[in-house]
Length: 440
Image 1 (cartoon, rainbow, N blue to C red):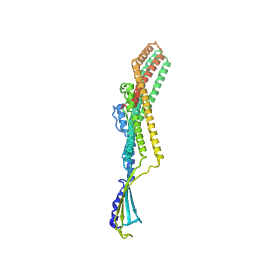
Image 2: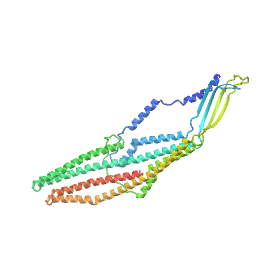
Image 3: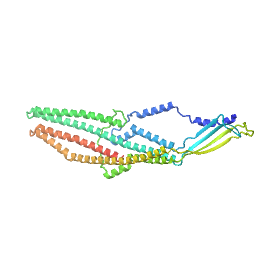
Image 4: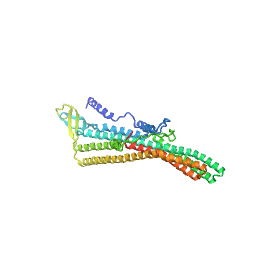
């Protein structure tokens, strides 16, 4: 074989070797990946406005929560598979050299060939659609995760709010008890009260001190929890929580219909169902052969045993098919896809039933909380305040015992705590309703 003929092999070898080259070394790529993961895993003490409400905190959490970043990367990863699944397999190249056959045209020095497999029509499309539906399911999972994180932030916010209100109520009642203590001391000096009354008021003030300590601990705990959801350091400052208006709920039937039709968890299962249907289509198409096309070229020497050897090169084309004779694994793939379809159909039904229950539970809790808040505002709290004021006046006039004063004060304190708990319960019920009905 002449030098000129060897030169013809250089482009083929270059093309083969080029596939082995990468733009970045594995060490460099590993370093970049490590730096990226480190930057995304660290909490960031970004600024939150001093007047931020719960919905603004939800927006910040949805912008900084690391689990959402991970879910987005999962979508990108699955989306990248679409092009892979829809592409042709790499062609195969062969070079043969050595003691090859001799023809009438002369001794064959070298042979080079190229072969491409072409899947049966519809297979690549089915595989690409399967990958696309899996990516769509991941996107729906991301939207569902957003609803879950928003609900968790709202729950943490209302717990944070309730802890602050409990501390406020305890402080206010500590001041009230100090005023009552002055009244008791005045009556004791006038020999109209007893030392037992002073001991009772001191005991109640100690209980209030205990409630203040508990409230402070709860504030710190819920603040830490809220900062974690916001992906901020534990001790980062947060705006003082304030009660926000909770709009009246829509009709229950409309909310259930909305949840069943548009909730991301339903869409995720539906996308998985579609993916299994495309898998079933691909499994059925696997019963048909794939095609093989190829070309070969042989370089022939002009010297040989034959007296008519002329060294004329030879070019050949080939056409072939795969032989899908092993049907057992193909039937198993069909059964797998059919089972997956049944699984996802049941999953969709389960998700809808669960969402109906969640919507109904949250809706009834919200309605009950609204009625209870109205009852407290219009009747229970005004009556308790009036009863306490009258008992204190009667005690000052010597018409009632101090025990009656404490009883009415304890009732008023309990109702104050309960009313703030009612507001927090309403906020949580509405948060659950928004999450279950996919209300952003």
